[in-house]
Image 1 (tube, rainbow, N blue to C red):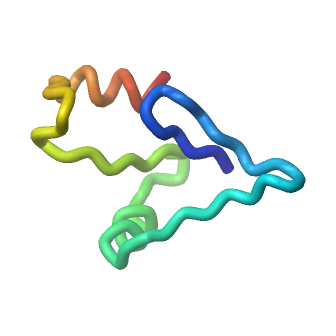
Image 2 (spheres, helix red, strand yellow):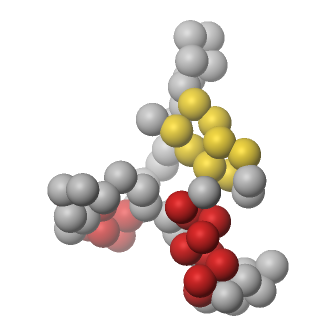
Length: 62
């Protein structure tokens, strides 16, 4: 499992565990994902960077 925060990916390694706290909505969204989907992100419509929806999708794909 990896986690992307900003533009940096973090991966669990020996001596460096990784935890993610999911809300009930997160769990429901993940449960509804198609089998081939491997990434889930939470982004606000109006975040501090004012990225367009396409820029947000590009960030997720990178």
